[in-house]
Length: 601
Image (tube, rainbow, N blue to C red; front, side, top):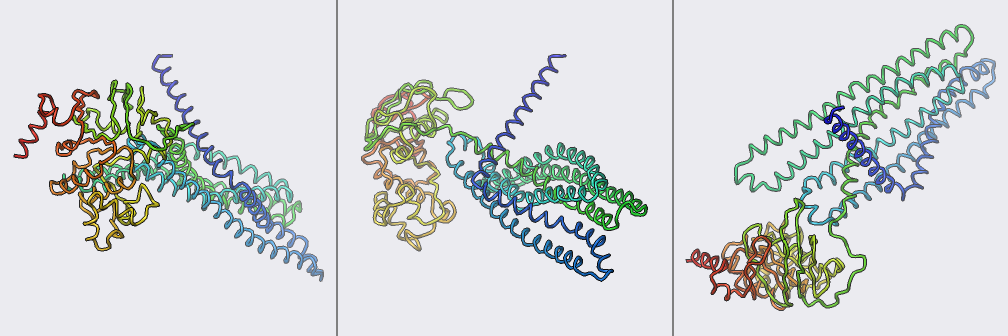
């Protein structure tokens, strides 16, 4: 065998192993969802068995009526006819009542599973680290919570009922027919061979087809979400046509994938109907001659034909189940993959208490690299005393934001450690860490709801007086009072009701109310115009008093309020001193300051 052939065989083996691992992962998830509902599941299965048993009794009672009750009725005896009629009516009523009961039970179980799964997906996406969210697009996460769960909902709401009830019904029919007339039962059993072969053929091909449908659907959703989220940029740069063309391509792929599944159904469904009709013909032909020869009672012939027709009635529903199953299986694979993602940032097993953090930060030979393997911080040594405001200055990609992410523990160092008051951040429990270190970004994200709710994000139990005091401390109180409902004003989606400067002041008030020992400001004023910047600058100075602060800013007006400036280049500190000291020198910061002064004049 050639080397290329060996490599292809190895790759094929790896693909099979990966597929098996994915299926095992999906089964584990399904088992964990069903385990708390095992009693309800057992009760539902029992109801299904009883309902289908009652339903399958109909043709048997018809045979008894034709072969026994009618002759006795002709002889003037009505007891047998009344008994059979009562039995048929009772079976019909029992079928209806039991069917309604198991449908209700299955629906309740389905909704319990979906509620559990929907909650798990939401909690998991919140639990996962920033690194995951930076590589896993929001559109893909939305697809997990919407279209994938919808596929599972369709399967649980109707598909499982069709499969379980259909299979149980077919088993009852086959068993009763074998007991009534073994030869007719064997004819029906023989029809199962081509039916199983056709189903196996459909299974192999539809598994690939439906997985492709789920992938194509997810791509359409991702592109749509990203386009709508970035609609301002799309319209500003006149990219409507290009985005539309790409959406058409993705929708075209989705259509082709869906057509492939429909083509498979176009073979499978008529094939099942053909097998069913041929089976009924064979039973009618063979048993018809047996009736003429006197070897078979007429009632048994009627029951055999009825059973043969009813045997294939659930097949169409089961075929629809398989459609739903393949779509749901592909969705379950994606959801289980998301749920098995492990956060890169783990909670400490034995957290070290920090009852009253002062805010001293130390970087001890910190090395950090992202997934591409390139060192962003080669070996960072840095100490920031408690209460000091430090500004980080440097070109884009120098490592400033990486330092901020390490301080807030959105990432962990590859080597070395970041310490708060001498304690490694990896040993601090999350609630303590998040209350001790707060980050304010340039986005100043506000959630739908009132301004008061947004300010109280870090301290939901804060009183109205504390919320107002925080807003007054950063200079936001005045503009809030001018809004229609004051602190109860709804900020609308993402704070669109407020200006960028007002949103930033609200985020400052939120940070002030949280009262952290360490505050990290990542480009917090870069998106503001000059009037907004002046407004925010005053609030910023109030916010920084009495706490350790790290400021990342390109605007030197923000840097001027710092006690200390660090110029970062290639993940290393190349200049370190107060703003006045560095301006008086002839280094990079002095050059940047001179350029900034020239731009102002």
